[in-house]
Picture 1 (cartoon, rainbow, N blue to C red):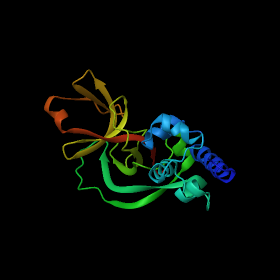
Picture 2 (cartoon, rainbow, N blue to C red):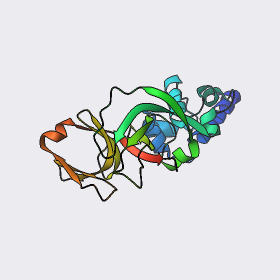
Picture 3 (cartoon, one colour):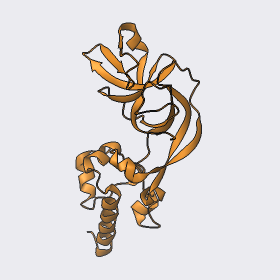
Picture 4 (cartoon, one colour):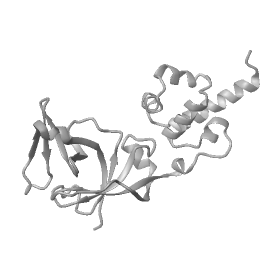
Length: 217
């Protein structure tokens, strides 16, 4: 039998869960937290999530696990307004070829949480900051611009992606051509489109979708 105190605890947890999820669709948070939609829905009815589920939800929504589970403390800095996105020592060719060694983190970049939400993200999981080289993606991505890549988004469809061909790392607009070819497009009209097919595709891999870019004026 559930007593009144347990009911109050469950009700308070549901309130914090709703605050953590905010305007993000429940199905999106459930998927990213690796929880079935039916089980996730039951949490809003007062079902206890268990430690591991609660930890995944906290990580995905960018709140403190202590706060989400117990109400102690307050939501962490990500809910206050910013998250830290790792900056990798990687340059993506946007024109000439560029080779790179294994990626190393060289810093972090504070990123506005509201901007991330506008991009459909509720946390910084899988996000990285890279640097573009070359002028083939101008004016969208300038030479030396920092770009935000979502490494959890690698499904090929039309869009701007960071990708690898062998040891070469690039950033371009990609478009699928049928089932066995990929068109590589530049924003700068001085650069002709390319088509990847055959053996070249064996060495092709998407690193992540580019969601944002910034450059100095």
